[in-house]
Image (tube, rainbow, N blue to C red; front, side):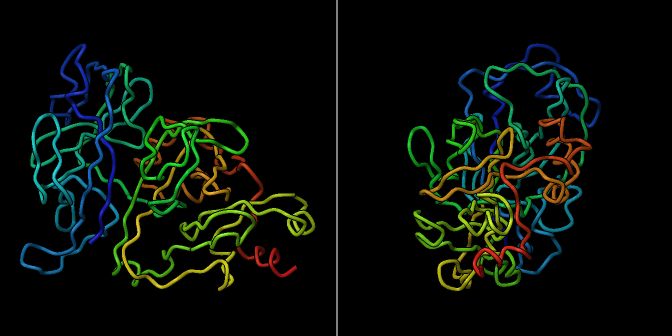
Length: 341
């Protein structure tokens, strides 16, 4: 059973300006205008995507998608813990659905989230922003989106911000983070996925990589996903790759001593951060990347998630192959030269 978490903006934090954008059954084309309250704050929901029925019998489910109930091929998604939204308490094991997707005239895509048959708010790759007015332009029923396996930090990792180190899972849309090259930048999206012990044992390629303290310079210990790229410098990088600093996937740096990939002993929660551009951010003195919306990562997204990404960054559509990273990237097959030289 996989546990996921995501943010939504509750309908009680929105006001209707025209039409019925928050109450209409959006199986038909959506219309209407609404404004998000200035003091609106996202509510985080934790969901279990179960893989057995109430009698304990296994059912087919990918455990990687959040679905509208009528297209879900397995058991429904259930609340992992109680939550109060719009003044209503929803108990643990309430059924959660990804309902309609609504498009706005300014290019945003939001999802209606439903709990026990009640539409409670909107989520999406980008959440509705406080103080912003949106006009709906279209809508689609029967939604499904993926909880992606992308380069990310593990929960508990402290990220450097103007207000000091903060756990990566606490960084929400709009949180300011210190970057290496572009000063203070705001998070535009944060996603999480929890892999339980059984999933990790069945898919060891997802096991986190542990970078020990001072293994790559002067820094504290850090644990990341295997594909997460860290910034490596020194004479080897300059001699071998003609760059003073390069980005290298954590899995390529495993040496069994300072950088390891231990066996799974419990669940792990991966967290990925997206900024307006590819950034390098610090955790305990070790610099590593934010989510890179490059072609290979975007292809791992569901169709609707890709559409949302292109709505947020229209300049990416059709140009992913030319999108620059913050620093040159060393292929995994060549990374061993950094330690062998």
